Length: 131
Image 1: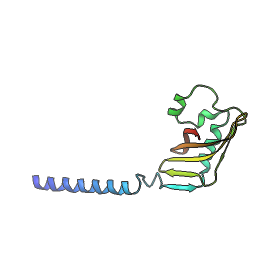
Image 2: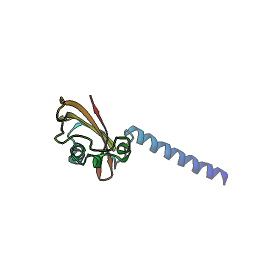
Image 3: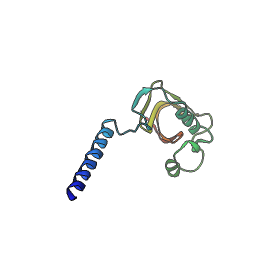
Image 4: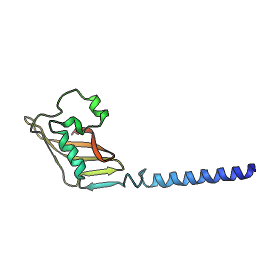
């Protein structure tokens, strides 16, 4: 009886190990998360979040974690615009980023990268870096 339990346990361990190897070889993504995408067009829902971020209601586009670390108040002055660079979307699983030009009134245009995370049915901004 102990031998059967050991064999069954060994088989389960082999199956779990095989599943882990397949998961890692696929880049750590599940079918639900999608595969790695580089140089593609930004999804419309992600672009909508980026546009919301530079609007008067910008905080609604942020992850709760990022929102908690930023000073209170409006993120960008009125008239701020982000123009994505065509083909700059990169995505691995639930995380993506897009590069483009950030135009803040009264400042020189700056190249910026916006990081996003897919939280269920919509994308939220996780970071913004001006290069």
